Length: 248
Ligand SMILES: Nc1ncnc2c1ncn2[C@@H]1O[C@H](COP(=O)(O)OP(=O)(O)OP(=O)(O)O)[C@@H](O)[C@H]1O
Image (cartoon, rainbow, N blue to C red; front, top):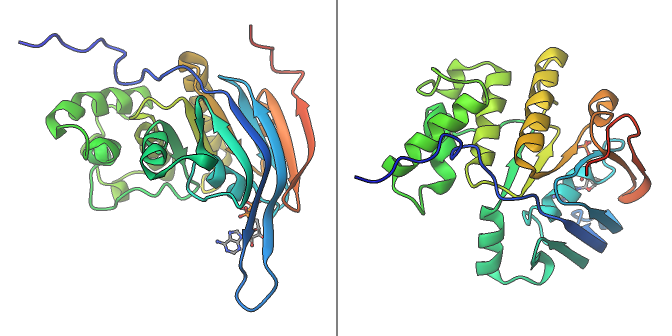
């Protein structure tokens, strides 16, 4: 008989990752028009376990920067180092390992509609772990995000806020050192959005993963340690939130 996993196994994460971006640039070809510099020589250092809000008008480059940090897109210039991995120099195998160690939460949840909440949560680990081994962990994660008893529901049988909770549980399944969230409350009413931010900040406080989120909501930004403002692909302001206590 194998020893049962500790009660916190499902929600535990690796310690938060520190992150450094130097002069990072991303240019998109725009059909027949001129190329768009979505991220323009951005430099940013984030302490391990920190919470950072990226704010700025639509089109200012927030999502693209998150995609670069998450290695969803490749930078055209500059360097990004997260923990010990310089992702801008990493080969395919190292990038696959890197992506497996971070979590990404999207505005539109991106759940697989034919899978239950539980199966959505374990989908990222199925190539590496036996389904039966992952199920207990999925249950713990769903309980941690307040969805106990709803493990067998399909996304269509859940509210928007509940679907985002499933997406957060899925993002946590690999115990991420870094959690990136792109407008995680953008599709939710403000009360539900507040619950989701409460949840993300609680998970950050309990497990210490670094959290970087893009938001248009100033109240949400004000709850993060730091607010980084973007415009036209660059950082135009970067300030600590004095209302949020400094971490030891
Ligand atoms: N795949 C792409 N191809 C071409 N242009 C793109 C692509 N992705 C983003 N862009 C352009 O890059 C710029 C930055 O877009 P991005 O989505 O990063 O901004 P954003 O600040 O996240 O905006 P929003 O708040 O509306 O989500 C915009 O001009 C956008 O049109």
